[in-house]
Image (cartoon, rainbow, N blue to C red; front, side, top):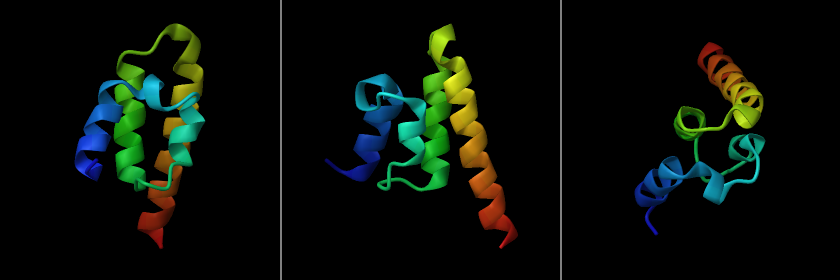
Length: 71
């Protein structure tokens, strides 16, 4: 499966590909920008029980993006 197609499939249903939001941040197939897209898509249709985990993972990826931009 091409990376772009995989990314689109994951964004459509992130919970089918990852058990926990933190798993997205550790997925080496994607860069931080793509990870952020996945997490934001997950947040869009997540239940309230996962929102804290998703928000924490989004903050982690954003910190990494900021650190990379500063270097």
